[in-house]
Image (cartoon, rainbow, N blue to C red):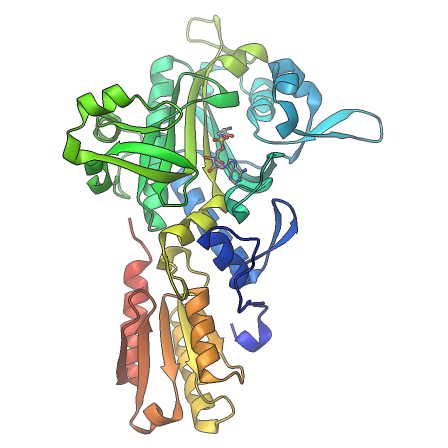
Length: 448
Ligand code: 5CA
């Protein structure tokens, strides 16, 4: 992409309304634009990141046996009357009336819709287990939307819903999603820790929040330090095999959010030098709630003995749009964002130090062509801004590798390679600079 043809409305100054660094940087880097409180447009740079996050989430859901569907954003209130949540959900639900005066709502979650789909199409235990997910916009009329996309009113969620014949099968499905979540966040360069959690309006008695540690996190968390060293399941994990060991490794040490923290237990179970109190961002939340919705909505399948069975359910959410902010909270410096390669909007930033100079332009076009042919995503700053402004824009938007090309270096056949994280710059012969960057990008595309 040539920057002169792109749409990158960067801001030099930090917007006053943004309290936390990810919100400030997302506005400054021209990733999003607020449309109303907690409601955003995603501009090209932000949208690229969102799509990459979405793709990782999708790959890991598919790997773990979930099947993608797409449910509507607008739902009929009658479904929620069946489950009994229509009144109970309260003011967070955006209620709408259509022209026929039917009560509708903008979905804050989709347990009811998916249970109705299941009820009307699955009749036999032979079709179980089923785990259906979608990546769709949700609306929650949060009393205090804040921190940009981290606590929005409209936000993109991956929500999966599982149906199993027995409690034991449902527990295995829960474990599959648990393991998939560990991989999902690790692939974005994030260290997530699953923590015992409260179930809130979704309900049920087994639930984990996946938390990444960040000073600006909304909740206080308490954990055993060693959990930060724990490894995530590799890509070739057999998701249909026994995953209980993985879950055991991650859940046998204390980790809890402030909602359910038990200080006495924390002190009893965790040696003093291993106790970590920190702040965290919830990027995912998984629930096992048994037959709460299937029972209320009359979803039943025929069991092996011919008798009707009410399936066991769970739901599994990932905050896809929140993750764009969470990655920035975890990876930035005073100059801007530092994207991990797997979620970077572009992998290489190419800076032309003397646009308009025939030799420099030709060298840049040649490098651009070679990188693109190698499958690398390049943002080429071909504008006639001065060098200093180009450097600060490229640092601000956080492209992981930069190639800096100017007339002086070219005279001796060299370009500069800059690694955004850490900032080291080296001059290399054009071909070796190119190869160096291509290899570095390729090796960092899969972090887990
Ligand atoms: N139905 C269940 C699981 S599919 C559910 O709705 N779970 S949830 O309420 O925990 O939301 C799932 C994830 O969405 C959260 O872990 C969080 O990462 C994200 N999320 C929730 N509320 C917001 C919000 N206001 N803004 C941005 N992301 C949010």
